Length: 477
Image 1 (cartoon, rainbow, N blue to C red):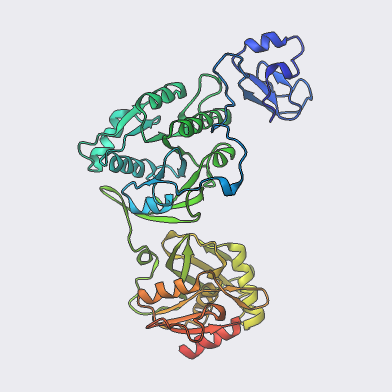
Image 2 (cartoon, rainbow, N blue to C red):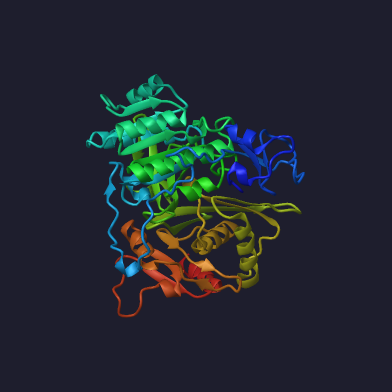
């Protein structure tokens, strides 16, 4: 988009540049760069439809520059001459949240957290602010969707007695920035960015222009003042953050709140983190006193069966730096002329591919069967290391024979039927052994090498192809 000054734009016929300069806002065409003093459905210059976007003309007033840099200009220097130091972090006191953030909050960092309504975003952030405030860290909670009394009522329900967290019920950007500059909090939460508006724009709060402009000003305030700002964002029906995608590029960390509102468990996943590992997750349980971190998340995703049942296989997956055990359940039932393929928590297209590989290389046909696959606990698995466990669960359900007790599997399966290694296989095996599992079918490259220390209590069966994995399972049954 061309956001140049009004003097450099094409003026609307019958409307002078001087008149446009007096306007508080203007509308710029994303196609030709032409400007208009008011919104029109069709650009008066290139006649393209729906291309006018509200912008703020650059002001010549001293001391005011909307396009100021986020950081002070520095001289050119070689990387070897620049002093590199670890970024200091302040723990929030909530272990699972600190894990996702990479160890805690960072001075001047900007965090964007999104999730479905009512999933617990405000609850978690209020708990984190209260924990920080009790360690003498100045905090500020800016609420645009609730009144101060509503926030106070929530804090009472959460058991946060005598909390000294500062609360500001405001949605005007200029007042929020003035309050942050006056109080100098170490951490400020904006709940939510879609409710904040700037006087420089005439569009309604929540519009693309308002969200982008307000986020840019808040990011600039964080970098210049050293305040860590947490932005709460709404999500679309598809689960993505609402508003312009530039919002995700602008911030340092992007967190997604996942989970079913009908379940008591929540996952916070890091999609982007300039100060830590991405795809790290934190697991929480919703209680009467708010969100509590789950120390052993594998217990949530494992089966509660007293004896092994057909169609169940335990997978050791990797979420960020944490290996977790998840139960994969499969149900194969006779279908009609158009059998269904349904997966929950796993990629549906990959399921169709695995069924084709299973038929071609292992001789197990499911073309006339309905196949349903589910990852227990609502977790979403995106890594291909789940392939082997999915195929073994499908085979177990089709034959009606359960896998051995204490059985785990992981590994990627290729179209040629080969079983490929998964990253950090030794850590996965040690986690399984720690939780009492005794039998593992894994890629040959992930098995302990000769001469290396064996994993106590775990019988490991390395395989190179899917046919070998099926033979091993038949021998164990």
